[in-house]
Amino acid sequence: MLDIKLIRENPDLIRKNLERRGDPEKLRLLDDLIRLDKEWRQLLTRVNELRHERRKMTEEIAKLKREGKDTTEKLKQAQSIPEEIQKLEGQAEERKEQADTILLRIPNLLDESVPIGKAETANETVRVLGKPPKFDFPPKNHLEIAENLGLIDSERAAKVAGRGFYYIKDALVKLDLAIVNYAIDFMTKRGYQLVEPPFMMHKKPYMGATDLEAFQDVLYKIEGEDLYCIATAEHPLAALYMDEVIEQKDLPVKLVGFSTNFRKEVGAHGKYTKGLFRMHQFNKVEQFVFCHPQDSWKHHEELQKNAEDMYSELGLHVRTVNVSTADIGSLAAKRYDIEVWMSDGTFREIGSNSNCTDYKARRINIRYREKEGMAPAGFLHTVNNTALATSRTMLAILEQHQQKDGTVLIPKALQPYMQGKDRIT
Image (cartoon, rainbow, N blue to C red; front, top):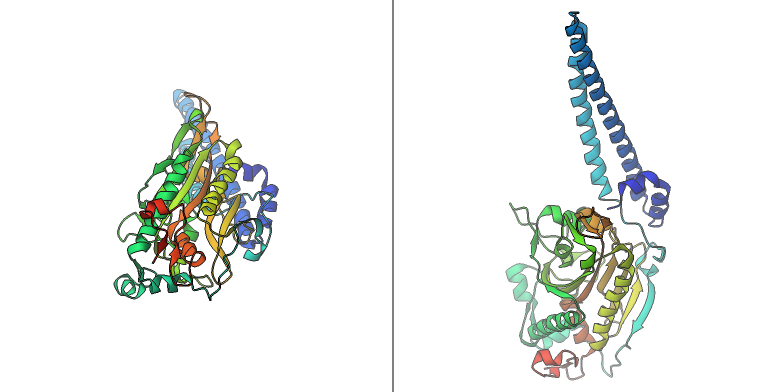
């Protein structure tokens, strides 16, 4: 979330930045927040004045008693003050709760380099890696390929768990695990600490890790429990140091997290949902960095290079786009997406990389201090990026490395994790 002090002191700066998003609702929220925050502070001021008045009146009553004078009128006045204080404190608490709720919904300040647009088509292409494969036959989509090879069963999975789940088999299971182990080895060699987080989270840390109001329709809630199944390792990794202060000498904290993830979004309107692209359950390897505020843009580019290097080693044709205001979401100050070329000639998102500046750390309350024993210097910055989501990476391999005879070539980088096999048959 944003610093309320910044909003109080520079409301026009916040308003101008929000205008770039083209969302009138966010501007209305800002106006409501400013009004509620002002009312809250005015009520607190009046409460403090009444407390001072009560102390002063108590002294006056004591003085009258010492002088043997009548205190009836003063006592009557004094008795009404606590009731007024209690009423105003209730009003102040109500305004504070409303303001805090709205503050969580005000999005992050956008970096100046974020393109402005009303549709995903406003995203700007930054880099294109590799070239589209050339086929001398009509290419199939990944689901057809996997079904023809006997590697996936959607009908029985739908019978057992519903649409959006799959039984994957044999070489496709091995390919899934190969992608996980390849990504983990790649990232740990670059100095990232491997973490497997809890696959469930309480509501409080989840509210800090993401915009839960916007995300909760995607999440699976455990009935009768204060627990949600995670949608990505990013969320529990973000909450790892909740309510803690990290020494500056220990920064940056660079993590690579593996998790199985659960999402309800399979039937999302207007989105490509075929096969492995949008599943209720999938594996993912995630990059996450806690860093000094001065270093987050450097790490943003570093995480992007990590992901691009992996896709290049896998021989995949992808592109990096600078995501526009229409699609960036509320947490990131800037976001890159990597989009993969698919056999229908369309690029679709395969991973995203967000610099959330201090927005997420402020929500979760993670600060840093320059030296031990010193007061916290401020909030950390957080950067997160998909390393590899295995379902979409498998999809890309199946479609881009398919052969005329129906087999699929295994990228050389994955062959050591596939017992040396060079193709799926």
